[in-house]
Image (cartoon, rainbow, N blue to C red; front, side, top):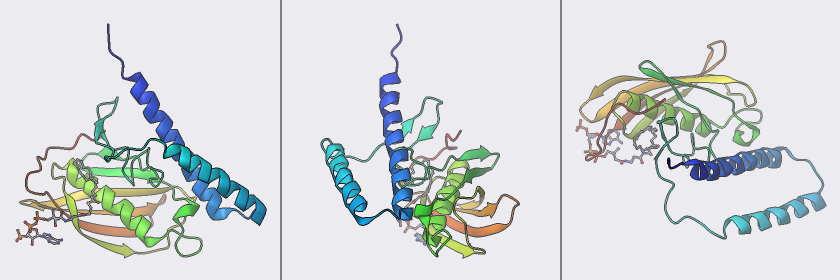
Length: 208
Ligand SMILES: CCCCC/C=C\C/C=C\C/C=C\C/C=C\CCCC(=O)SCCNC(=O)CCNC(=O)[C@H](O)C(C)(C)COP(=O)(O)OP(=O)(O)OC[C@H]1O[C@@H](n2cnc3c(N)ncnc32)[C@H](O)[C@@H]1OP(=O)(O)O
């Protein structure tokens, strides 16, 4: 007899679907132009939904887990976590010594009207640079991040993000990366320093 993880996966799937719905809700909220009575009615519905979700809450952060495909995942992560409505979620793929992801920002990420807030693109690059360091066996915490904004980043448009680990010195590790248009035009470039805290065990990260 085998023990199946399916019920747990089904619950996580349901959490991810809830988060996807909340993302759609956030975009709809950002763009809605319905009349005030409808805004008031929807707000009341959402207050009710919020209370239902708060009926049972976690008192610890969502942990790192090994997914069904054997890869390490953190469903609560603000960039990659399917169970975190704040996340795109970014799906990161390994590409030799580098990592990359296809992505499309959303209306809820707006900064300057019509384009993405610089803090959001910095967050995506922070994470991707960190994953590049982890892929090189040098996972760490971000100590510094330098960002160059070359062109406004559109939302609702498919884009590419890429990062690679460039060098290491003891517990310090440097990565660089960029968000580009599909034709390769650089939009945002970043370099980051990642430091492996004392006591962390590092190993080539189990990325897909
Ligand atoms: C998000 C997941 C993270 C958890 C990962 C878990 C498992 C790993 C598996 C996979 C990971 C996959 C992906 C990771 C993805 C994304 C990464 C995003 C990560 C974040 O989103 S993370 C949040 C923001 N991040 C922080 O919350 C950091 C807060 N901070 C600290 O935790 C400490 O501050 C720390 C650890 C940075 C250093 O602490 P420490 O005690 O080890 O440092 P210490 O003093 O010993 O210095 C040693 C040498 O580093 C130099 N140095 C120190 N700090 C520096 C700085 N800031 N700038 C320039 N140089 C610095 C010194 O000058 C000295 O240099 P020298 O040796 O040459 O003298």
